[in-house]
Length: 97
Image 1 (spheres, rainbow, N blue to C red):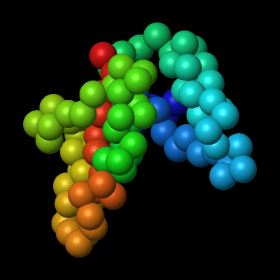
Image 2: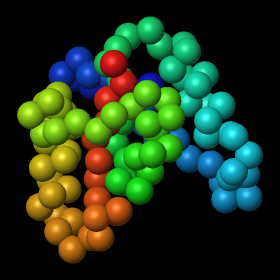
Image 3: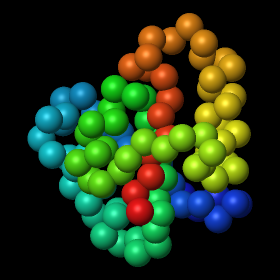
Image 4: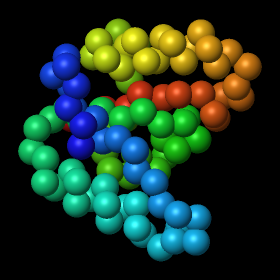
């Protein structure tokens, strides 16, 4: 869990080695991290194609005007820099209330 200067809290950088994927490793890590942190909301950044995975934990996509300052800046930068990416590879910001 990562705390930002604007007071927001992020579930950040979950990674599982390819040989260990599809075994529930990421799910277990996420459940453990969320159970240890009582503060809400929790935000995350992911590729749009992963949004269904995170929705299983209660996260939902949010719009630009709902984003804390930190995520607002990152999202706007991605929108400028990553204009040619396919929609499933674009950044999505999600929130767990």
